Image (cartoon, rainbow, N blue to C red):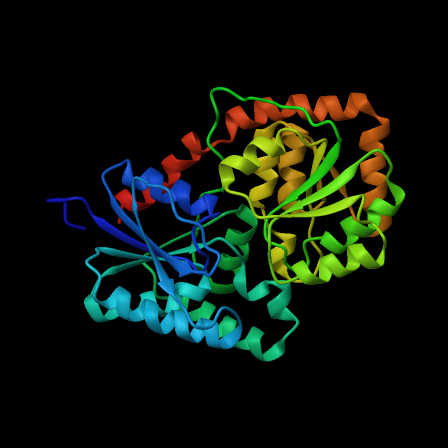
Length: 367
């Protein structure tokens, strides 16, 4: 990259940028350290105005909002924007932005980086559809041999990518910034919190059903996604309206304040697809930094972290009964809940964006 002026980095994601905390951290860290960053997302009918950032933002208007036509339209428009954008590095985020940036980088002789937030070809909604799975595997194979630098969110994903494609990935986990002042509020009604996209395989249906066995707590689900309607019907059919609430999406600053009030958080995944089994979810660290205990899956990444810091109650099986047992254990054992909560403080001091962002900067400074 040219050293005569700030290197220009172009990122792209398929969301509308409003709630993407990881990309806000990445672009902020780079733009505050001698890089000129622009990120492209999409414009939805209900998209909120974006606040002023240290980096540039752009959102693409689309006719189609989901399915194959959405991906085709978005990738077509993203390619033409990328081709005529002034940039030194194209930064593809996950497979759904890879092809336009790969083509633009090749045609213009520019650098390409690949950031795997997910093991995209092993998502539950992908592996259960053979043709879709085949297509994304081909796109993944292309990504694994064309970029100039690779990074991902967990050791598990990095190991899987290296095993399958013999490609080395750096690790940049999605940890929040360490807040100097943590303002902890209290809620009149104790509640358990889920935050994130409402997708299949996130334990949401099991969480709703588990509330049949729980008293003295509500379940509040923050986020939107493909199964929002399904969850709404499930709550109504099970007559759990007074115990479970779909709260919609909140801006990150609003959500952080609410998370500190929760009794506990939920980080749950099904066993379907390697994506879930080797994940290290954003919400896992969000709950940690909010100083609340959580219930998480006893998968390798969470197990290794918990063995070191003991900030979560791990369950071996994603089921209504196992989850209810876990919640009840935290309710009936205040000493355990308090210990997990207290351990969050040390874990946050040693796992935060101020430290983690240095790994990101090293990647881009060495291109």
